[in-house]
Structure formats: structure tokens, C-alpha cells
Length: 171
Image (cartoon, rainbow, N blue to C red; front, side):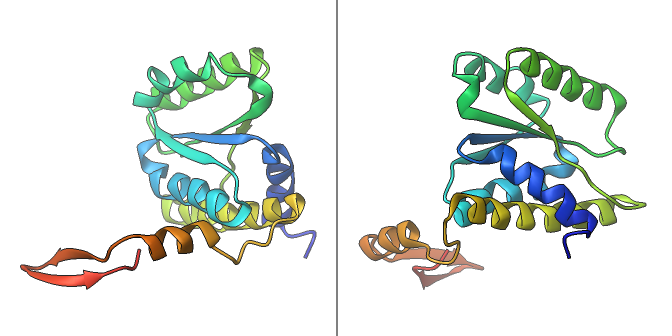
């Protein structure tokens, strides 16, 4: 299994994320996979991670990042070959800029002949990265203690569902 391409891709990404906050700067077309990666890092590896969409991220998020210690952060860049060339170029320029500031910058790979295949590969890779990161950190990904604590201390909330209220304490 160590020779599988997704495993070979996931291990170095997990190592690069170990002990660092992660920001996933991504194109709109990769939003689902980027949000999944950030969510799985938070949940499985118990490590802070956020996803921000370009082009907005390229002029808002970057201001905040420029003021932090680069050793505490890893920037993950995710786009698709079908994205506009100008957007891909902007993400690459941003990656180069922050690499020069000594941030750990990682392009997030994808495999496949079309956008659907590439999205699926990103989703699978996101899960593997988060689980390998949990292993590298010595963290058990299964207990969700903070979520459970929060839920047990929150009142049940009525949620509107097609015109009727339903009780919900679930996420």
C-alpha cells in the first residue's frame, strides 16, 4: 500500500503540515475539496486549518499572513487545470511570494482526466492527509471531544425545514 500514488502524495503533505496552522488558498472550482481538507485536518488531526477562496484570498488573507511567523504556518494551494490561466498564475505567484518569505508552501496535487476525477482524487487525498497527519502527531482521530462538549452545553435549536420547525442538536 505504501506504493499507491495517493499514499505517496499524502505522507509528505502530512509531514509538512505537522505542528503548523494550515491555510488552504483555493480556486472556486476546488472549494469542496479545499473545505474538506481544512475540515478533516481540524477534526482528525486536531490541528487548526482554514480554507479561503481566490481571488478574494489573494488580497485579504495575504495581508494577515504577511504579519505572522512563517514557521508556524503551511500554505496549501489548490486549483484545477480547467481554472482560468490568470487565476492559476495568480495562485502560483502568491505561492512564490510566500515561499520567499520562508512560508512552507505546498501545491495540492490531483489526478484524473476530467474535473470530476480530479475532485474525487483531491477528496480522497484530503482524507488520507488528515489521517496521516493525525498519526504523525500521535493523535487519535476518532474522539470528537470538543464537538461533544460544545453540543452537550448548547441548547437544542429549532431549525426551519421546508416550512416546519424540527428539533436539532445534530450537526
